[in-house]
Amino acid sequence: MQKIFGLIGSYLGHSFSPGYFNSRFHAAGIDAIYKTFEIPSISEFPKLLQDNPGICGLNVTIPYKKAVIPYLDTMDYHASQIGAVNCIQVSESGLKGYNTDWLGFGKSISSRLRPQHSKALILGNGGAAPAVRYWLDQHRIKSLTVTRTPQEETLLFEDLRPEVLAEYKIIINTTPLGMSPEVQGFPPIPYEAINASHLLFDLIYNPAKTIFLREGENRGATVLNGLEMLHAQAEASWIIWNS
Image 1 (cartoon, helix red, strand yellow):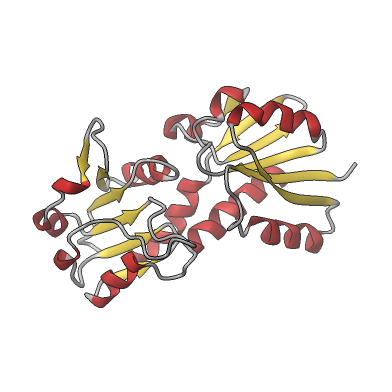
Image 2 (image 1 turned 90 degrees about the vertical axis):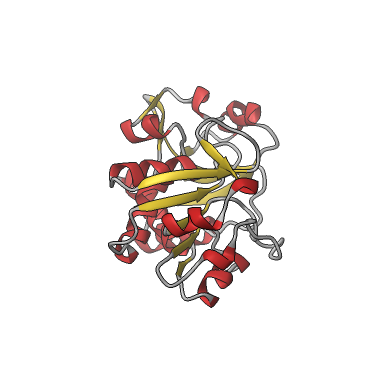
């Protein structure tokens, strides 16, 4: 039976994953296919597995990285600490959840860090934000999360002042603001406070340069999009499925 791998999410029109993984399977001579599975509710997840008995592994994207957890049999240590799953291994022993976002983030940002990058602003608190925060914590980089609505231990966007950006030299956008096709969107932060000492990381990779990154680049900041992170977390998923 041909092995099936895939991606689950609510909207997957923008995904690079099928092309990436199907090329890898072909090159390695593995009889497998990678598909996208759009489901309007996580409650349809069990039926998805039932209808596709050949599934051996899945990636998970927004909005199901946390919602999928109750359907798993076990999680690895890092996924349990992060509280979010973006990779699932399906085997006879059940469904095991992993998080490869934190690995991809770390591989992407590490070479760009400089001595002044000791504090980070995380814009948004969904999707990959918990994985980003976990990696920063592991590397003793203090983080502050900025959100639109009041949450515990977060700062509201409306309360974000230039003096905060003067202290936090890493700014990471984990929101979908600016992602294709809504490319005119951008996080509402005081861009005038950004300078050459800042590092701006946008987890969005389409478009390659969002307004958020362009605003930073225009002020001399180092900027980085999410493509390297995407490739690195996908490679980590590949290793999990084929080890």
